[in-house]
Every structure is written in C-alpha cells, then in structure tokens.
Length: 592
Image 1 (cartoon, helix red, strand yellow):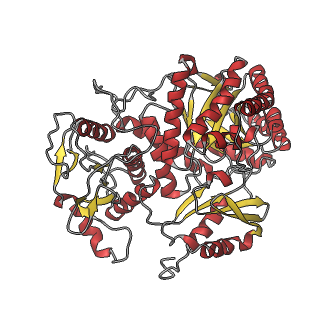
Image 2 (tube, one colour):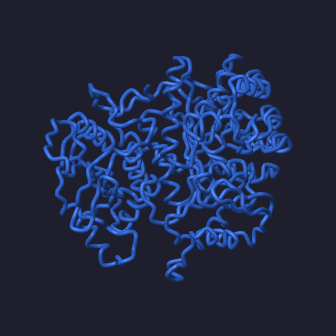
Image 3 (cartoon, rainbow, N blue to C red):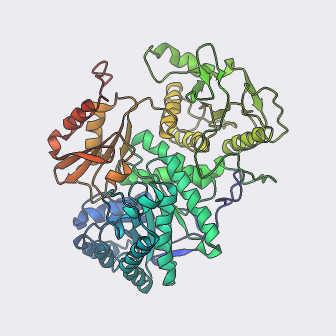
C-alpha cells in the first residue's frame, strides 16, 4: 500500500480533471497538470449580501481562486442567488462553494446558485450524539441505505446542473456510526468519505474532490496518505483530486507553522490540487501564505535525482517515533530515547540570546552546534557509522533538499541496522541573502515539521531565520505545532465563517490574555457547534458559541456549562480551568 511513488523524489499525483464553473468566465479546472488552486472562506453572515460580496471581492483581489460561503439553512442557501448575482454584475465570476453540514435541504437550494457544494459526510445525513452502539452488519447496511436515500438527490442535481462537489470529512465530526465501527481515526475519516464517493459513482457522477481535515497536522497527514493509498487500491479511475488544509490552525505564527507542516508535507510528496490555509484572521491574509507555500515547495523537494530504492524509512500511515538510544548532548542535556526533542543553536545565536535567558525560561538553547560530538554524513554516499550512540546529521552542502536528505539518511541507517539519534536542520544549502522571516518560518515548518511527522529527529537546528531570538522561538514553535513539545498554551481556533456566533479574533485575543501562561494546557475556541465538540476532542477545555451572545464551555468533548453570557464567558472559562486543577497564577502581570 503506497500513497506516492517515492519518499525521495517528487512526482505529482496524476488526478482526473474536474471543472468548477466556466473557465472562460473565471472558473477553474483542478487536477491533471493544472497548477494548485488557492481558496479561502468569507466570515460574515450569509444573509448580509453586501458584506458577502465585499469580502469575496477582497479575497479575489488578494488572488483567491475559489471562495467558500457557509449555508447553514435553506434561507441562507437561497440568498446565495443574490450574492452570486451581485458578483456577476460586477464582472466577478470566481467559483463559489456552499458549505453544507446538517441540512440536505439547504444543499438542494444552494446547488441552484453556486458551482460547488461541500458536504461533510459526518454531518450531512447522520446525527451526531456521541452515542455508543454496536452495529450488526445488517444494521450498518440499513444505515448506508438511509444515507444513500438522503444523498442521492443532491448527486443527481449536481450532475444535471454540471456542478462540482467536495466530499470533506473532518477529524472529530465523524458520525456515531463511523465512530463506533472505526473510531475517531484516519481510517474512519477515509471510510466515511468513500461511502459518499461510491454513491456518486453509482450515478456516474465524477465531478468531485476529497478533503481530510484535522487541526492536528500529524493526523491530517496520515489521513491524506491513507486516502490516496485507498483510492489507488480501488482502481485507476478513482484518481479524484485532493483539497489540502489543516483546519482550525489558529492565528499568527502558530497557524502558519501548523499549515506549513500539514499542507507542505503533502505537497512535497506530490499530493494536493487545491489548498486552504485556515487562519483566525481576516481571510485575505490566508492567500499570501498559500502563495508562499506553493513557491517554496519546488525549492524544498527533489525533482532532479531519482533513487533506485524507494523503500520508506518510516510507516507513512501510523505515526511512530524512530527508536534511538539515549545520549548526552552536553553535561546537562540528553536526547534520543524517551527524551524530549532538543533545540540546538549555533554559537553565534547562543552568544546573542544567552544574556537574555532567565533560569525559569522555557525557551532557551539546549546545546550549541559547534560543541556537539556529531558525525556529519553525506547520505548520497556510502554511510559508515560504527557507534549507535553517535549523534548524526546531514552534512552541509549535500546536493539534495533537506527533507530528501534526512529521509535518505534515516533509510541508510535502517539498512545498516543502526538507530543513531539524528539532528535535523531546516536547511543544508544556504542562499547568499537571508530569507525573509515569513519564508523562513514556512521553510522550517515544512522541512522540520514533515520529518518530525515521519517520526524522524531527536534534536533540531534552525538557521534559515537570521534573527537569533526569532530562530530560537521558531524552533520551539515548530516542536509545539508538530505535537512534540509543549512550552506554552496550545490553542485550537477556527477561522470563522457565517456560522460564527462571536468575534473570533477579539475573543481569541481576550482568552490568550488570560491564559497564555498555562504551559501544557490546550484550549479550543470554536465559533459554533458544527465541528466544535468533535474537533476539540483532544483539547483540555473548549469555548464554543452555542447561541447569539451565549457560550458553552467544554471539558474535552463534554459540555459542562451552557448559555453563559459572552461578557462573563472568559472568566467562567478560567474558573473551569481552576476547578480541574490546571490553573497556575502568572508570575507577573508581564508574564500573563
């Protein structure tokens, strides 16, 4: 079972072309040899026609090629006619996606007006009650029959009107039926999507694409790899296009790094026909990040040197950290084994940041590169290493991109039966001009994050970011985004849409002001309940819009407090954290 031809050589997956709108009038064709398409989503109330039109125009001006608009009710879906009409009067024909979750009748209305219908199989025809039930094969078959009856009318209407469909599963919003048989797992997400795809194919409808989104980059990567391998197994004509995205990535540097890890890793393996970077920011901010990611991939992947042996040095479908022995990096810090993944800096960086480090700081250098006992190896040549406790890395100047070089190094060590700890680098070939900070951040996310998601790496060194303090902070942020270390509060924040029941950016800032000092606590901030309870299932606490002006608070995926006035909700969240003994007082006002 494989999802790409080689982990060392980029060959883009060949997908069937699907047409979205009229390409002569601003529509797009995705798949085949067409460039990867950038898309985003507006955040205003779908019933506010003027605001929807203006936000769509702003996205188009930023370079967005597909715009998604939520349609939670039939009334919202019907207003898509007015939005699309106004856009066409302004000579804007960007394809519009109607985002549908719980109401098939809303989809049947929306399909009249827009080019794409997005359905979430976990919400479209199934109830979600987190119920535990054992399904017999007969009961399961009956459920599938019921789903087919609800979904088929939309399929036939999409086919009649020459519309496109996105079958988009989300980690955490799987149906109870799927959850009880497959668990909240990548396999469950894939099976959920394939059930809907088979119904499409029964009616000879093929103008659809898949998405497998999660707020956890590792889970997201595993889901897409498994999906593509399953499509390959189903047959050559199952080569449907793929939309990539890390859902609820958050804001700022953290949101960009999470997206770089998930989207960048898969683009680097040749997967992906459309992408969205989901940020808790104004939507036009997402497009430059998409553009920068796409521009970096050719530089960070190997398209020149194929290798005869394409065996994977890791299991691409189940995350497992590469087994290594525990070794000392210096007199104070170990790496490998069960140790944390360590942060190494250059001597120049250490000299600049060391005077500012306080004893209790979590963000600090743990070793100096020039002081390490390290073997610098060229994985394109014969690798000789006689001691398993020797720290190794890829030698600077090797004529390969870093991801390829480190995967190849791990493969050669595996063939030799060696488990040496590996120091990862974000770059092994330096450009004469320092990278812009926005690109250095994405490069570190793609390179280091991809390798960590493969289970490779015991320590990391970031040099693409020229600022000493920024490079140190970036190293820790990459480790946190990849789920390898926790040195600060972790936030899962949705990017907002017309379903959102409060101002996500304002509320996220307010929650961060009160909780940013809580190291190791994960807080989900969700605008509504569509994906909220599921997507935040691995969060410690959840702040979820329940009704206009009202907030529900969760512990994990369990609702604890209901209909709290928004003005009180942040402090009630703090109270809930205290009740569960996760609260510590900030050391000072500045620290808080």
